[in-house]
Image (cartoon, rainbow, N blue to C red):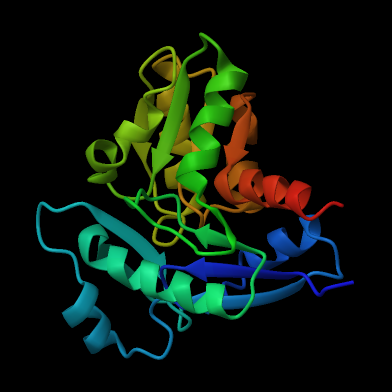
Amino acid sequence: MRERILGTLTIGQAPRADIVPIIDAHVPPAVRCIHRGVLDGLARGEIDRRYGAQPGEAALVTRLLDGSVVTLSRREMRDGVQHALSALDDLGCAAILLLCTGTFAGLRCRRAWLIEPDHVIPPLVAGLLAHRRLGVVVPIAGQIASESGKWQLLARPPLFAVASPYADAPAALAAAGADLKERGAEAIVLDCIGFTEHHRVALASLDLPVMLSNTVVARTLGELFAA
């Protein structure tokens, strides 16, 4: 049987120790994983020079291997993401999972199945919620505007709140979730790949469904490799 290879691509530096275990839990052990990051091997000064976000532009946030947090220009990252995808494609990956919920236009692979969370999560959530109201937690305030277009399939406009999985304490996330529930949210999506199970636990007292972006795409990925 031909070896099956899964590539993962973070907009930061790989491997993402917070996310790899979630993927491993849903992908068969026989699948070999190759983890790459757009910022692999780059020092902080080079990252800021090449990819740093300017005031007012669409931005994304991620964590580096040393634990520091960087805010990146979505526009500048797009070509870096495409270059890294092509490199993974050339390594023979059957599928490549983008470890970012941000939106990028026109990404492509020649052979591999490309799984982009912003193409998977919104339609799935829209199908689940029907006419219920969704609350979305984003890591930086600017993403309320820059990433809101991907939720157009929802029957009702979503409600937004801000809390970072990297920089904020669980209490800040709990407050954001409580605010969403008070405004009418009936389910919550944590719209950053860096939110993990302990963040969902921080919202348990709300008694609302809380969906983790990385778990949703990892389960979907598992279906591709299930046969």
